[in-house]
Length: 145
Image 1 (tube, rainbow, N blue to C red):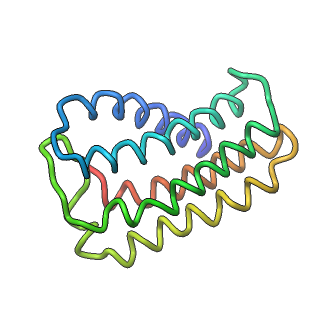
Image 2 (tube, rainbow, N blue to C red; image 1 turned 30 degrees about the vertical axis):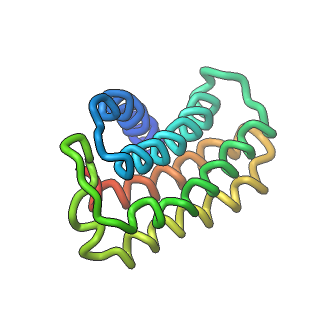
């Protein structure tokens, strides 16, 4: 049940990301949105495999997890400056507790790095998506509108 909820949330995040980029004027905010969209795209790759919409491919799954880890590592630098744009979904709480925001990004990076090594069989996907999705949700709940 929880995994289904995480997959549904992932779908909503992907749909919202496409609309959110329209009309962004601040280059720093656009860079942040592009970084988050890159993570969402890799989550979509994993999610579609987990739901059986695309065939399982262990190498592609591990590559998606490795890409998520790389983007998660870049995330704190993208948010370091408190930039704003009417299209931004970033809450001010990011900069009020930047240490926690950074810790959540580091947690995503660590989990994704581990999955980039450990995903071997199709049965590994649902727990992988759940772990990554839970980490994404923990950050989005506090720091994203």
